[in-house]
Image (cartoon, rainbow, N blue to C red; front, side):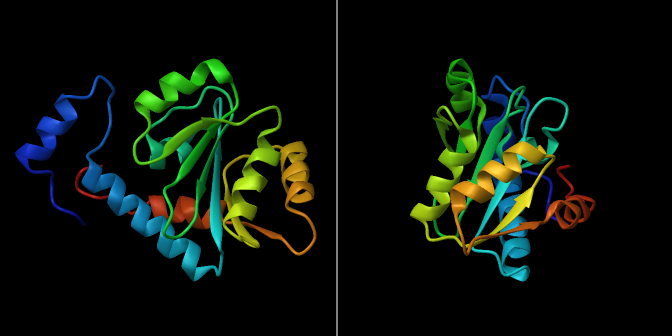
Length: 166
């Protein structure tokens, strides 16, 4: 377990208009998720969230997506959060911790697939309650040779181990 945040870290939290954890806590979470990615032989992770199934996304990015959001995590790169509704982008950019935020375009699965291809990801871990239709569109956009692995159960088990800050 990690230590409870120092006063300087708590001051950082007080400065935010949004309820959130410290940067130290988000770094711990991201390291745990990167270890999960590596343990499962994945080149990248996609965390999907929206509506009543936004918890996995909010856990890593601090943004409680009301509509679909896709967080793309690739080793050594800044995480990218793609937000489906254009008018939600400014709020997501203000609330999100540790990721660049962009509009997902006319087709979120195609935008996400483009980001994954840009990083050469072929084995992708997927986390979250993604619809059958979005899964199919993502797989098609990734093309032959790409493999999508469901890491949702492993991700949820990982979340059961709480830090002191949580």
